[in-house]
Image (cartoon, rainbow, N blue to C red; front, side):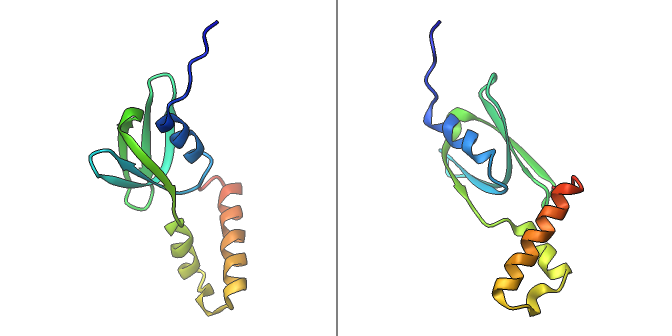
Length: 108
Protein backbone atom coordinates (compact mmCIF):
# COMPACT_ATOMS: atom_id res chain seq x y z
CA UNK A 1 0.00 0.00 0.00
CA UNK A 2 1.40 3.37 -1.02
CA UNK A 3 0.53 6.31 1.18
CA UNK A 4 0.21 9.63 -0.55
CA UNK A 5 1.59 12.68 1.21
CA UNK A 6 -0.75 15.60 1.73
CA UNK A 7 0.01 18.79 -0.11
CA UNK A 8 0.35 22.01 1.87
CA UNK A 9 -2.86 23.32 0.33
CA UNK A 10 -4.75 20.20 1.32
CA UNK A 11 -3.44 20.50 4.89
CA UNK A 12 -4.46 24.20 4.98
CA UNK A 13 -8.00 23.48 3.86
CA UNK A 14 -8.34 20.43 6.10
CA UNK A 15 -7.43 22.48 9.16
CA UNK A 16 -9.76 25.27 8.00
CA UNK A 17 -12.69 22.86 8.16
CA UNK A 18 -12.27 22.79 11.93
CA UNK A 19 -12.48 26.58 12.22
CA UNK A 20 -15.72 28.53 12.04
CA UNK A 21 -14.69 31.36 9.68
CA UNK A 22 -11.60 31.58 7.47
CA UNK A 23 -10.13 33.59 4.66
CA UNK A 24 -8.79 31.62 1.70
CA UNK A 25 -6.18 33.33 -0.48
CA UNK A 26 -5.78 31.92 -3.97
CA UNK A 27 -2.60 32.03 -6.04
CA UNK A 28 -4.06 34.66 -8.39
CA UNK A 29 -4.63 37.04 -5.46
CA UNK A 30 -8.36 36.57 -4.95
CA UNK A 31 -9.56 36.19 -1.36
CA UNK A 32 -12.78 34.70 -0.05
CA UNK A 33 -14.16 34.49 3.47
CA UNK A 34 -16.58 31.95 4.89
CA UNK A 35 -16.85 28.35 5.99
CA UNK A 36 -14.83 25.69 4.17
CA UNK A 37 -16.18 22.48 2.72
CA UNK A 38 -13.58 20.10 1.31
CA UNK A 39 -13.78 17.13 -1.07
CA UNK A 40 -10.51 15.21 -0.64
CA UNK A 41 -11.33 12.73 -3.40
CA UNK A 42 -11.79 15.36 -6.10
CA UNK A 43 -9.19 17.66 -4.48
CA UNK A 44 -11.63 20.56 -4.50
CA UNK A 45 -13.16 22.82 -1.90
CA UNK A 46 -15.86 25.41 -1.46
CA UNK A 47 -16.11 28.59 0.56
CA UNK A 48 -19.66 29.27 1.71
CA UNK A 49 -20.42 32.75 3.00
CA UNK A 50 -23.81 32.77 4.73
CA UNK A 51 -23.81 36.56 5.15
CA UNK A 52 -23.35 37.32 1.46
CA UNK A 53 -25.22 34.15 0.44
CA UNK A 54 -22.38 33.18 -1.89
CA UNK A 55 -20.44 30.02 -2.63
CA UNK A 56 -17.13 29.78 -4.44
CA UNK A 57 -15.64 26.47 -5.61
CA UNK A 58 -11.90 26.06 -5.99
CA UNK A 59 -9.22 23.45 -6.62
CA UNK A 60 -6.85 22.69 -3.75
CA UNK A 61 -3.97 23.46 -6.12
CA UNK A 62 -5.20 27.08 -6.35
CA UNK A 63 -4.84 27.72 -2.59
CA UNK A 64 -1.94 29.88 -1.48
CA UNK A 65 -2.91 30.46 2.16
CA UNK A 66 -5.70 29.98 4.66
CA UNK A 67 -6.12 32.29 7.65
CA UNK A 68 -8.51 32.22 10.55
CA UNK A 69 -10.45 35.49 10.84
CA UNK A 70 -13.07 36.79 13.23
CA UNK A 71 -16.52 35.46 12.47
CA UNK A 72 -18.62 38.46 11.35
CA UNK A 73 -21.82 36.56 12.19
CA UNK A 74 -20.95 37.00 15.86
CA UNK A 75 -20.78 40.77 15.34
CA UNK A 76 -24.23 40.79 13.72
CA UNK A 77 -25.65 38.63 16.49
CA UNK A 78 -24.09 40.84 19.14
CA UNK A 79 -25.71 43.91 17.60
CA UNK A 80 -29.06 42.18 17.47
CA UNK A 81 -28.81 41.30 21.14
CA UNK A 82 -27.55 44.78 22.00
CA UNK A 83 -24.62 43.41 23.95
CA UNK A 84 -22.54 46.41 22.89
CA UNK A 85 -23.48 48.07 26.18
CA UNK A 86 -21.89 45.24 28.17
CA UNK A 87 -18.35 45.25 29.50
CA UNK A 88 -15.85 43.71 27.04
CA UNK A 89 -15.48 40.46 28.99
CA UNK A 90 -19.28 40.06 29.22
CA UNK A 91 -19.61 40.82 25.49
CA UNK A 92 -17.35 37.86 24.64
CA UNK A 93 -19.29 35.57 26.98
CA UNK A 94 -22.58 36.63 25.40
CA UNK A 95 -21.25 36.08 21.88
CA UNK A 96 -19.96 32.60 22.79
CA UNK A 97 -23.26 31.70 24.44
CA UNK A 98 -25.13 32.82 21.33
CA UNK A 99 -22.81 30.79 19.11
CA UNK A 100 -23.43 27.68 21.23
CA UNK A 101 -27.19 28.28 21.04
CA UNK A 102 -26.98 28.63 17.27
CA UNK A 103 -25.00 25.39 16.98
CA UNK A 104 -27.45 23.57 19.23
CA UNK A 105 -30.33 24.78 17.08
CA UNK A 106 -28.44 23.79 13.90
CA UNK A 107 -28.25 27.34 12.58
CA UNK A 108 -24.51 27.60 12.13
